[in-house]
Amino acid sequence: MMSATDPLEQQIDAFAQYLADERRASARTVETYIRDLRSFRYYVRNEGLPADAGKLDIVALRGFLSSLFGSNQASTMKKKVSAIRSFFKFLLKRRIIEQNPASGLRSPKIAKSLPRFLTVEQAFRVMDAPPKEDKRAKSLKARDQALLETLYGTGVRVSELAGMNLDHCDFTESEVRVLGKGGKERVVPLGKSAVEAIRAYLPERGGLLEKAKEGDPDALWLSRSGRRLSVRQVQNIVRRHGMLGAGRGDLHPHAMRHTCATHLLDAGADLRSIQELLGHSSLSTTQRYTHVSVDRLMEVYDRAHPLARDKTGDG
Image (cartoon, rainbow, N blue to C red; front, side):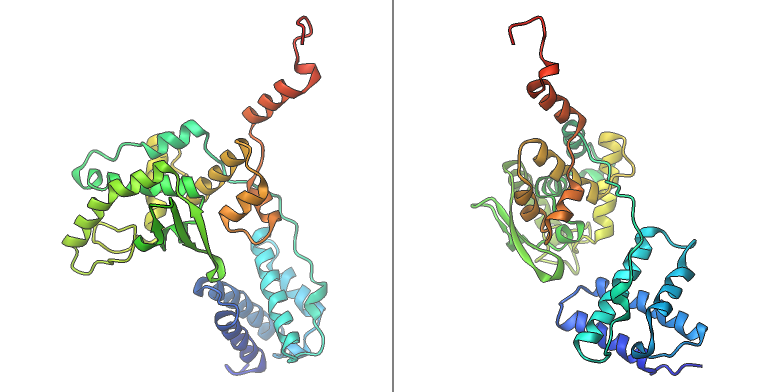
């Protein structure tokens, strides 16, 4: 039986430290990577393979991935491949291993799917959705509307929204500072509607803080108890308003982010600008979010294609 301090376990621990200290990865990212690597170590143990990354080859890595087929989706497999590649790349860079067996490891192909986005009309209905008919829900109407206006108007990630502080907002310049992945900070514009909605929410926010025993005075979005809204709570707000406003009980904050990008593209925004707004490090990532809606396509076709013109008319 393997010792808890075998070389492979020590190497995984060193990689976790590197991710947290040097790459400044979030705790959630570190946890995901290490969980995948520990499942790899578990496979190594069961197969009686050397518990040392320097003694493992690509056959061992492929064997691990083969053992996962049937019980994992392609997207999950791809994440595990990414974790293994990053791990061995780190070990090679630190000269803990002499060769990188993961360099020839290929990720499974994933069928590209896009989250269902909202039409402009649906987006407005979601933001204006009436609260449930009870006093507790009505008392938070201003918060929910401001939150949804900000989510749709800025296209931020749900974690970025939940992490916003009041002093991140600059109402004079109509912008908000956002702390994104890897601790990267960016400034995104706040539309007039979002600014007005947040300002309308501030008195309600102050009331929540006054009543709270242990409130969070820094957080922009507060729960009924005066504490910072969690990611899960934001998801529930979006889901509830999605059902009330657009009949979409499956509406997720990521779909609001995709909706923001889609509507910007339809209005003529360029990919680079959308990339900056969304905080993507790669333009190829932005391209996954963007597509031309049918209405936009028909509009362009009717205006530009020769066959769409009235043959009996002058044009």
